[in-house]
Each structure stands twice: as structure tokens, then as C-alpha cells.
Amino acid sequence: MMHFLLETFAQGLPARVPEPEMLMRDAAQVDAYAAQGRQHGFLAPLHLYHAIQASAFICPGDVVLDLACGPGNQLMQIARMNPAAQFIGIDASAEMLDQAQQLQACEAVDNLSFQRCLLPALEGVASHSVDAVICTMALHHLPDLAALAATFGEIKRVLKPGGRFYAVDFGRLKRVQTQRYLARQRKREWPEVFCVDYYNSLRAAFSAEELVGAARDVFGEQVELRQTHQVPLFVAVMSGPPMPVGATQQQLARAAYQVFDAKQRADFRDIARFFWQGGYPLAFAPWA
Ligand SMILES: C[S@@+](CC[C@H](N)C(=O)[O-])C[C@H]1O[C@@H](n2cnc3c(N)ncnc32)[C@H](O)[C@@H]1O
Image 1 (cartoon, rainbow, N blue to C red):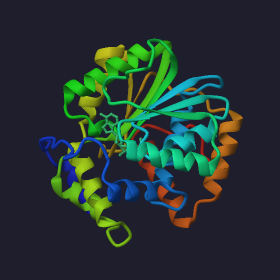
Image 2 (image 1 turned 180 degrees about the vertical axis):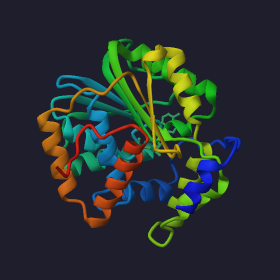
Image 3 (image 1 turned 90 degrees about the vertical axis):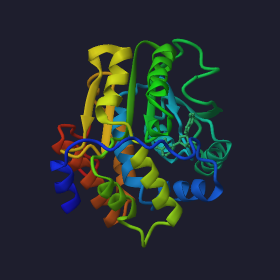
């Protein structure tokens, strides 16, 4: 709490420190990240949150591209909630794609395929071929603002006219101490490699202004910006206002929420409240 208060009143932004390794390829790093995204992992509530919010940009029959899908936990959650859409997960890390394919085989999610691809270029994805693009917690891996701009340019190229996007990532915080605190807040539960990874991600985050600026340069003023209250720990940019979430999506999200333990439910509600206080309500509440 103290860190959030200090963050609110701090001035200026520290310089961005790009990720030491752009791709996540190290076995320990990949395993730790994948494990935290599994059913009882720390990231599962965040995945359900973004699955609900991203679903407000997905319609039945859509082809949806997920940029930098990593080990696939987040993507699988979204694909399960949208069974009438087809998903393509892309990542440049063969190790991550291997994890994602193993998970897909275990979970028997069949509306999903994977492709190896190095952002910003979406090589092999035809122009105007997809209905929606999602990208979660990955843009901070890009080396610089030019790559961020090029990524939004490629999103525009592959989207059909009127296509939608939902991109969310960390925002750059003002205090290095807050970054350090967040990265180690559950250090007793997290492997060291996960803490280091989290810290590197926060240091590499673009600012909210950089994220929305890059999106608006390509898509214009229709782009909407949403962020967590006072402290832009999470920043979402989207192609326009969210659409209503369908009954099937709601039912599947409720089922996913039901299997959370008490701590995960509390984490989910904290994330939802943090965004809601920042002016971004949940598309619907899965506990209702
Ligand atoms: C923190 S993970 C996020 C994974 C997933 N989107 C999620 O929300 O859990 C970031 C992913 O971005 C991938 N990545 C980093 N730079 C990339 C690039 N230039 N092109 C494609 N994938 C990239 C990494 O390999 C890693 O799998």
C-alpha cells in the first residue's frame, strides 16, 4: 500500500531498460512462467481477467491472432471461452511454443493453432485476413519504440477493415523501488527466476502514453486507453469500446472462476477493482 501511495505522488519516469533477452528461451524461465499460468498459479486470475475483457472484442466465427502467446495459458483460456472463434498463437520462442502445444494436447482445445514468428513482422499472415488481434503482457519485450510502432502497423495490415484489437501490458512505473517491491512481493512462493523475470518486465515496460500513442498513430483517435487506478501497473489499449459479452462466454468464465481457490478469487477481485477504479469495469462479473 505504501509503495502505491509513494508511486502516486512521485514525479517523472525512470528510463526504460529493455529486456536482457527479448525472447523467453531459457528452460528455467520458460518453466517458471508456464507453471505460474497453470490452474493454481499466481497468473491464473490475471488470465481469467484478460480472457473476459478480450472476449468483448471477439465474435463467433472470428479468426483471432494472439501476438507473443508464450506458453499458451492465457490464449487457451480465451480460446476455451470463445469456442466458435479460431485462434492462431504466434511466438518467436520455439521453447514457448513447445509448452503451448503440450498444454493444448493435455487440454484438448481444438480451435487453436500455433505459428513461429518474430515480431514486429507478421510474416506468413496475409493482409486483411484476421478479425481480431490480442496481445497480452508481451509488448514490453520489444526492443524500442520503433518496434512498437511497427507492431501496430502490422496489426493494422493483417486486420480486416473494421477489425478489432485488445492489447494489454505493464505500464512503466515511476519508482524503481515499486518495481522491486512488486517483483518480490511473493518471493517465498515464487522461484527466483520468476521474480527476476517480473522485475525485468517492469523495467522494460513502455509508458501508457507510449503505448496509446503508438496505437493512435496507426489507428487514430478511436483507440481507447484503460489503466489501473492512479498507478499504471497494467495498461490496456483497444480498438474502440468493448462489445457485450455473450451468454456462452459468461457461462464458461463463471466455470473458470468457480475452480479458483480463495486466494485466487481475492486476486481476481483485486485486479478487477484496480481497473474498475481506473474507469475500466469488467465486461461482466464471473462471481455473479
Ligand atoms: C511474458 S510472455 C507473455 C506470454 C503470453 N502472452 C501471456 O500473456 O502469458 C512474453 C512472450 O513474448 C515472446 N516474445 C518476445 N519477443 C518477441 C518477438 N519479437 N516476437 C515474438 N514473440 C516474442 C516471448 O518469447 C514470450 O513467450
